[in-house]
Image (cartoon, rainbow over all chains, first blue to last red):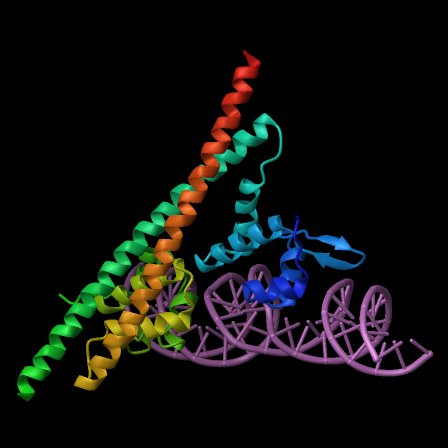
Length: 128
Length: 128
DNA sequence: AGGGGAGTTGACGTACGCGTCAACGTAACG
DNA sequence: CGTTACGTTGACGCGTACGTCAACTCCCCT
């Protein structure tokens, strides 16, 4: 039931190269099991990789993402959980700010498109 | 009234180094005027730099951003404007997708924080 | 005239995120 | 038993985005 993936299956599923997966492992973002020397990726590894690729799309560094992943690793003492929770809240603030800025950028771009559309309409009018 | 900035004033205003501004210029993201050999940054350059730094925060490459900046450069023939407008719309789709994904990531993180808070509440209960 | 301070152009160095070999292991198939 | 396929560990290379000198030019000020 713990369906495991080979490195190739992971690559096909997530559109990354083996090099990338090994690199993430070296950077301690992933820690797949081994069957002999071969890597076996579990559901947990797939969840982590999803978060890694998502983080990258937002422009976070792998080191940033490594911190973030710790938040999703439910383990540790009470004080550890408290610390992690604080860290998570800090991330939340960051991400909400970025989302807001993205909204502003989208509005700007929309306005620019509207200006362009108006220009085009002008051209067509002139051509009639 | 075309208040221009020296390179140092730009750096202080945007928290970047001279090297960064010269690098952006070399990559044709900026094209400040010159007074002799010295760079003079106009309002237009400041607007562009704002867009550049914003784009970087979203994880876009400088080459991506160079494309984006063309959209904000209102100049050219009818067909040029049409082409630019199409490009802008493609960007809009991309950015809206990224914003949506950011929303999902934020929700995930919020849920994780809630789980942590529940755990902490449990610890406190046990300590009473 | 001399000395600062700000700016300029190379040129080399560096951190990050992988790409790309080479050389080897090993499990399976005919 | 050979070979074919898949996987492994180094090790070096490369593109991006700058940092960090060095060496020189201006311009201003006393």
